[in-house]
Image (cartoon, rainbow, N blue to C red; front, side, top):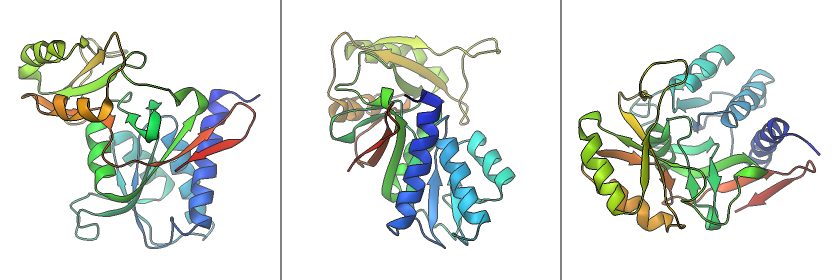
Length: 239
C-alpha cells in the first residue's frame, strides 16, 4: 500500500513517461502545465526529461505563479498563451484534479488557479490529468466544494444566483492571511456544495452565465486522458 503523496508522484511520472513513449509529448512541443500537489511532480518529471536530453525545445505555458516559478527554477522555458511562439494553441496540457467523475468530467480549482487552468486546457489539442485514487468519484457536487471565481464587486448578487441553483456558498478564506483568498487574477473564490449530485456539464454553463462569475471549476468541454494511481502501486488509465 502506498500513500497519497506517493500515488501523486507515481501518477505524474507514469503519465509523462507514457505520453513520451506514445509520441504525445515530443521535442519542440507547446505544453500547458497545471498547478497543485499532483501537477508539480509532472513538472519535475518533464524537467528531468529535458535535462537528460530526451526532450528538447519545449515551450511551456504555466497556469499559476507557483508553476511559473517552478519552471524557471527547473530550466523549463515559460511563455504566455499570447506569445507568438504559442499563438493561442497548445499541443497538450497536463494537470491534476480535485475530482474525476463519470466520463472524466472534472472539478478543479482547489488551488484557486481554475481560470488559467481552464484557459490553458481548453486551448489544447489534448488533455491529460494525473491523480491519486481518492480523486475518482461517482458524482459531483456533494463532496469536494466547487470553486467559482468571481468579481469581488458582484459577490452578493452572485451568491444569490448560485443559491437559486441550489448551492450553499462559502467565501474562501486565506491561510496565514487575514481575509479572503485573492486569485492570481485579483478575484475571489466561492466554494459551493449541493445537497444532491448535479449534472456538471449543465451546471458549468448555468454558473458561467451568471453576471459577475469569471469561471467555475467544472471542466466538461474537453474530456482528458486520466492517469489515476492506486494504493497497490498500479496506475489506472481512463481514456
